Amino acid sequence: MARAYWLIKSEPYKYAWSELVADGSTFWDGVRNYEARNNLRAMKLGDLCLYYHSNKGKEVVGVARVCAESYPDPTTEDDRWSVVDVEPVVAVAEPVTLAAIKADPALAEMALVRRSRLSVVPVDRVEFQQILSMGKTKLPRAAMAKKRGGGK
DNA sequence: GCCAACGTTGGC
DNA sequence: GCCAACGTTGGC
Image (cartoon, rainbow, N blue to C red; front, side, top):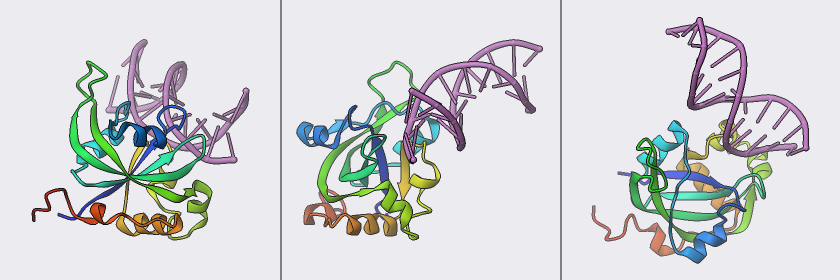
């Protein structure tokens, strides 16, 4: 099964990329939208996520990896909501702004642009690679491996 | 089951 | 800080 790609948004003053790096990993809580939640639930171990700073910055600043698949959101009694765990993989060398994404015809149709209010959106492989390339960023070898443990 | 009111998100 | 987009809620 091919790896999937996603984009997850956080307001940097709420939970910034640098905090994820400092924490080592975190559970991705606070999603209260069914479609976003369904995207969380579709995430598989080893999927890669573009980490986007919304509101302030409006740019892709890092790549994170799903290190635990979805489970009930521990911050609420409401069993409708789920979280996943993510860990940082690599910072984007040159953050890719929303303006740059919109200006690129290959990216203008991204769910990020079309569904701007959705906080967890799918990204296709081509879009993912294009953003990394715009960000002058290469994935470390370890993240290229399919999954930890590497089974078929 | 429709739809108006309301709340939230996020770009500008 | 404003406002557009849009998801959710609740009255009927």
